[in-house]
Length: 367
Image (tube, rainbow, N blue to C red):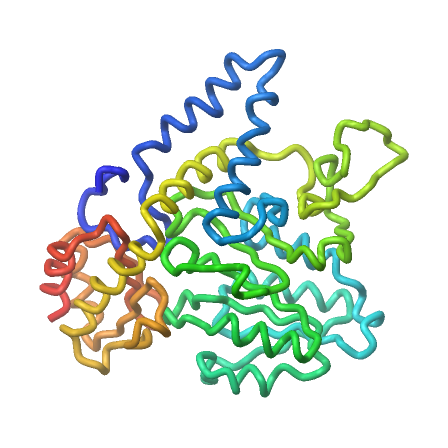
């Protein structure tokens, strides 16, 4: 597609970093560098709209309200700020468990483990348990669970977790639902209004093709005023320009989680990319992803497949584990196929700009 910078070789690392839009450099030049050079009296008057554009682009993409988003550097930083706003476990009338799975991205686990300093117990759904089955979650969601972390798409297997069903069960048990969409935003259509989760965190660097540094934290409107984060700054203030050191009032919006003076350029670039992806249509991206992934699935033995065969249970990432891994690895490298390998197998992630002809070449290395 002409909207993206064409990579040399066959680029299937979209689960890591999405390709750069051709418009990204112009957006950065116009809305960051030009503002920096010519802004009067300084650049901030022209930089501030970048944040509004970023949250509005997310709101349009996920069918929600822009005021419910707070820009963050990444998912880990967003959840760290959230964790700091949790009450000490001793105040929760016996709810002292934070539930996650052993297949969540390790960085998220590192953050959640810090809750132990606040009296919480971190419990895990085991690797071998079936997270696609809602009964697995029902068995773990006891009355002791304060919050459950739901990773929409598992990075190491390509499994797509049934978020809406889990959120419903969590609510019945009085547990907060926290959803991580870093692996799925931009390739799986997501509707926050339909999910009705309590908290969602994500980033722009992968399928949204927005580059690093532009993460986001979304808080359900019913909960915003119940959180009082301690990791904050003047941009967390309801009136950042009051400049009264003796008076701090939390912003009424999700921006209470923001902090001090923010970076600008990551949000300029990401907003441009998110608008592009929204204009293309995530449904269209998903359709192309399924067609190309199914082309691989149909050509390889079932025993190689780590990801679910059916697309309804599969993220945009296809994980396969052929027995002749070294041989396949050498062939993929010879064809200049950009991919990576984790413990479970090869990760291949076709995007809207990948083609059937490229997948045909990939298959010559696999079969």
